[in-house]
Structures are given as structure tokens and as C-alpha cells.
Amino acid sequence: MTILHVAVPTLTQALGASSTEVLWIIDIYPLLMAGLLVPMGTLADRVGQRRILLIGLVVFGAASALAAFAPNAPMLIAARMLLALGGSMIMPCVLGIIRRAFEDEGERAMALGLWGTVGAAGAAVGPLIGGGLLEHFWWGSVFLINVPVMLVVAPACFLLLPRVEVTSPGKWAIGQALLLIVGMISVVYSLKAGVGAKQPLAVVFLVLVFGLAMLTVFARKQLHAREPMLDLSLFTHPAIAAGMIIAVVASGALAGVELTLAQELQYVLDKTPFQAGVFMIPIMAAAAVGGPVAGYLSNLFGLRLVASLSLLVSAAALGFLATSDFHDPGVSVPVLLAVLGLMLSIGLTASSIAIMGSVEASKGGAAGSLEATSYELGTGLGISLFGVFMSAAYRHAIAIPEGLTLEEAGEATRSIGDTYLVARRLGMEQGAPLIEAGKDAFSSTHSVLLSTAAGLIGVLAVLVFFMLASYRDKEAAHD
Image (cartoon, rainbow, N blue to C red; front, side):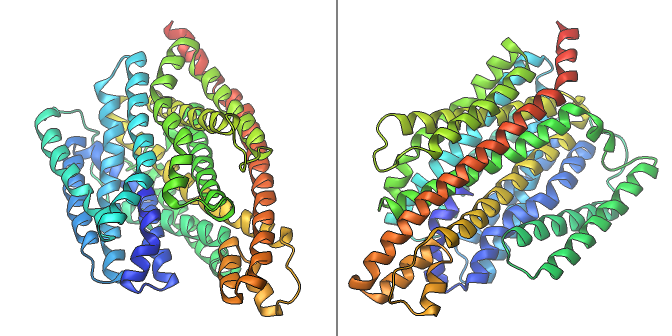
């Protein structure tokens, strides 16, 4: 996901993609993933996680090759849909296999921590690898890089994973799966479109109502079915609910903060994409080591304390970053970025431990799919919410210099990117003051945004502390 964002400008020019097509190239993957993860997780519990994982790896590898050589935007969108299908098979199975392989709670916490490290490290190196590939190869190289990885991982899984595994009884009802897929995609799309102001409010409302109706029908069928496709009792576990909330908020905050910082560094501080990537190494590198730290601390102090404190320290780091001067970062800004990345990563791993530690091994795929859905939902909504907030605050903060027409002024206030486009057309004499006004507005806007995010995560820390009270009791009983 992070490697693609670097390639978007290049592939847009190469494929002649419209703004709508670019939006679908980016959005179709998380949108379909959000709808497919739970059905694929429950299917894996029925027929075996090893089998679904292997199929997912093959599909993901083939879809990567198709995306790399797509001749036009519609073909790339179709390849991204296939990538989502493969990814939705892989994610819940990995978590389910970890749940089954590690019965000891301490070992499972460390294993989930290592899994979180790999995910965070992938997100961290994505922009750097993408920037390096695009300097030497065509845009398709950012997809083609997946193929050799799959060629190593798929045979390794085939040889190493146990062929005999415990599965859940019952059939996988395709009709119920379709209800869930359509309902989830409709709800997620309406949330993203509503937050991003991409569709009229009436359309957003109708799609949301339709999606909720599909999910209601699905839930009613689960409650009355002899062999339900998804065990809805999972949602009654306070630890699972807390884990999902942490996953949505922490992944959303991480994605939104990285997006905001990338814009601040490039538009305001005039850094290149690669320089911006280097500047953000502390947040990414710290996020990569947060997983094992979370596993170790959870075993030492208990999940409740670790989850709550990680969110509280994240909120404090965001608050300090909101008042920091990025023009003169010194040591404090890199340290704060590292603390933020570490604490949000610990929070994400804590969500894994809470969710996967609250279910038996035979339901690991379903629980893993709920967690993965929370990640996808959090990342997508985080980027949309931060983007919309920035746009609205920027519009009010920018002081347009005199001499611009009403049309030019209106376009320049949409975003800092639009400010730069208008300034480029105006020329140096009129454009320079406009860019300076845009830089000042963006800096003050990003301070307000980070402060608001800090307040919300602080409130979440208190909420999680109370929601995980029963999980603490369970740990005490084990002790």
C-alpha cells in the first residue's frame, strides 16, 4: 500500500489515467479487502488455513504481474481487484496460523509482536524502495517486486506448514458470504465517500442505508442458522471489541500522520520525496520494533496497562509534535516521531494480542479477519479524515494575496497542492507570495490537526483501560 502512493504521479502520466481512475486505482484495494476479509477468514476456518493461504499467495503473485504490465487504467484497476482477493486470503490465515501454532499466551504475544514488526517494516521501506525503483525502472516495477517474494514464500508455506489442522464444522454459505461482502463494501464506500466529500450526501446516505440493511439481514441469518458462517458471539468479548477499536484508531492515526508529514516536508520544507522518506525513518523504524516490545511488555505488566499507556504516550507525542518547529527539528522532532511510531505500533500489537488471545484456535481465521478488517478500515478512514480536515482547515487559514481573480483564489484555497498549481500559472512575481501564504497556512493547519488527533487518542486510552478490565482478570486467573 505504501509503495503505490509514491508511484501514483508516474503511473498517472504513463497510463493517461483520469482523476477518477486514479482514485479507483488507490481505493479499490482497501475497499474490496474490507468486504472480503471476514468471508475469507471464515472460509479458512472451514476448509483449512493452509489451503486458503497457498491459494491467496498464488493469486497475489499472479495479480502483481498483471498489475505491473497493465496497458491502461481499467486493466490496472482489475489487477488491483485480484490483488485484494489474494490479500484477503493471506491476512486472516497468517493470524489464524499464529493463533494455532502458539498455545502459550507469552509465546503467542511475542509471535504476534514479530508479525507486527514485519508489517510495520514493510510499510516503512515501501516509500524508500518505491522511490529507488522509480529512479531506474518504469512504474510497474513497484508491483513486479511482489512476484519474487511470492515465489519464495509460497513454496516455503507448502513445505513448512502442517497439512493436518483443526477446522470448524459446517458449510461455507456463499449466499451469506455475498450478503456480508456487499454490505461491508457498501458501508465502507459510503464512509469513505462521505468523509472525502466525493459524492452527494443523498447518494452517500442511500449507499450507507443499503449496506446496513444487507449487514442486518446477514446478522439475522447468523442468529437463526444452525451452523452460522460467522460466530457473532465474538463481538460480545470486551477484549475483541477493544482490540478492534485500537486497531482502527492506531492504524488510522499512523497513516494520517505519515500522509500529513509527507505533505509538510515536501510542500513547506521543499524536500524531495526521497528526502521526505529519510526524514520519516524514525517513525517507521520505531514502528518496526514496536511489535516484540509490545509482546515482552504485555507478558511483564499485563495487556491492559500496556495498551492504555501506549495510546496515552502516543497522544502526548502528537501534542508535542503539534507545537514543534519542523524548520529547525533538532533532536526533539526525530525523538518524538520515534516515540509516536513505537507507541502506535505497540498499540496495534496489543490489539492483536487482545483479539487473538480471546478465541479458541478453531476460530482464529474469523478473529484474524476481524482484526485485519479493522486495519484496512482504520487506514482508509484515517487518510480520508485527515485529508478532509486538512482541506477544510487550510481553506480557512490561507490568506490569499491581492491581485488574484475570484476563480484563481477559489482554486488556490482547495489544498496546498492546488496553491502550487495556481502559483505556477501566475509566474514568479505573483506566484511567490501565494506559495508563502500556502506554506504558512499548511503549517498552522497541521498543528491544529495533530492537536485534535492527540485529544482523540487520549480519550481512547481511557476507554480501552476500562474495556480491558475483564482481560486483566483473565490474566490474573492464569497466573
